[in-house]
Amino acid sequence: MAASSLPSHLNFSRLTKGFHTLRFSTRGAGFTAYVWRGEPGPVLVVNGATHGDEYEGPTVLRQWTESWRPSGLKGTVVFIPVLNEAAFYAGQRCHPGDGGNLARSFPGRGNGRVSQRLAWLFDTQVLSQAQHYIDLHSAGAAYQLFPWVGYVTQSGALESTQRAMSACFDTFWCWSGPYLPGRTLSAAFARGVAAIYVECQGAGGVDAGDAAALDRGLHHVLVRLGYVPARGPLKLKRQVERITRDVDEAHLQVHHPAPHDGLFVPSIQLAAAVRRGQVIGVVHGLEGVGASVVKAERAGKVVLLRRQRSVRKGDALATLAPI
Ligand SMILES: [Zn+2]
Image (cartoon, rainbow, N blue to C red; front, side, top):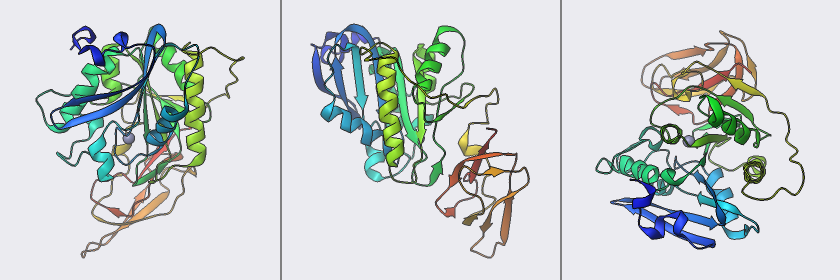
């Protein structure tokens, strides 16, 4: 659906200047968008809770909707604190209706399963209107991670814009890699929208430092991209940056899979440096299956660690990054 064929009340370019609350919906799925409309200019879209058990994005974006009333806004800023409402209220990563992972459902289908319909709704009615996009994720309830920001590597001006956006979240490190299908960022890539994602600690809560980092990062992005006037020079900290060509390196679900169901007892800590072959933990089978020692596939820093101790065969236990 082209933006021009949207109902006029959902077409950002038709809104009057000021603050608006919009409801996007399709059969069995929908979300609320908060829109600040300023002078003509680009559109920035930011959402939280693509996965339902990630609370940093919803927490920070909701605060902005209450208190942020900018003067001199150029363009349109759209915040969607909770994109995947059903998963959010169920307190789980995936959609309770069909078990679908929204971050594997893009670009979606208007007549598909409910997760696909939600992806389709967001892609065709919101991303289709955007020039800049930020997806706020975290480790979710079952994991904890060492926070980072990243983007899909590409060439030219889009990549430099994405790099500039990532640099705004300057207390996090930057981890970028090749295109993977199904994500919100994949849909943004297909539409030529400059897009980044942010990963906060997770573990079922909201770390105050992470919330402050998101807040600071969003303010920086708005200034850096020209949505709001700068009050002085941007003072960004230098970011540790890792750009990989390996499609699996930052694919968190594929590393150190549990060899069988059981109880996971980790022997490493988040952010620790680990040697290749070092024991990262033991999965104890509970139904007559013995214990399995899981060893590090590579050397690196522990950037993701399973926190929930009950594991099913194949659940990722840890991710190590060469930083
Ligand atoms: Zn997520």
